[in-house]
Image (cartoon, rainbow, N blue to C red; front, side):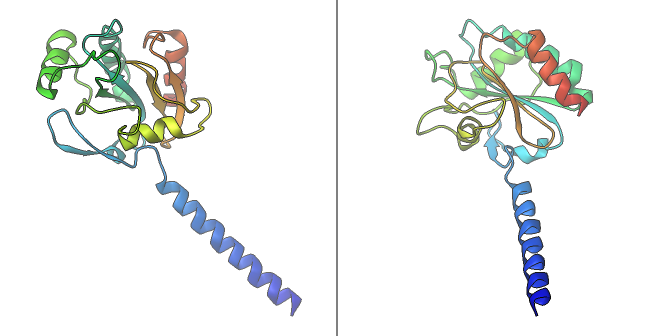
Length: 188
C-alpha cells in the first residue's frame, strides 16, 4: 500500500512539474502586442527565436546618432537572426516631441532606418507600456531591474525570450562589450 501511495505521489509530482514547465514557456519577454509606428498591431511573439535588441529612442538626443550604428548592426546580423526594435519615448528631456509620422520620416531620411519601429510610448513610470514594465521589473541576470535611465538604453533578449543583457545609453552599439553580447546570443 505504501508503494502505491508513493507511486501515486510521484505521478502527481511529475504531472505538476510538466504543467509548470509548460506554463513557464508562455511567460516570455515577447508575449506582448504593440503598435507599429504606422499604427498596426504587432505581436512581439513573431520575433521569438531571434536575438532581439530593444531600444527606447529619441530624435533630439545627444545619443540620436546611435540610430546609424543600430541600423548597421541590424544589416550586418539580420540574416543570422538579429532584429532591432525601436520604441520612441518623449520621457527624457522631451527629446522625442514629434508625431509617429514625423519620427518615421526623421529616421528614414536621416538614418535610413529599416528595422521595426513602434508607436511612441512611455518606458518608465505608472503609464509605462506593459512590455517595458516587464523588461525593467524582472530581476533578470545580467540585466538587473530598475527603470530606464535615458534614451537609447538597450536590452538584449535571447532566442528563448529571456533578457540576456542590458546596456545604458553611453554604451554605443559599436562598443566591443555590446557587440560581444549580441554575437554570443547569435551563436547560441
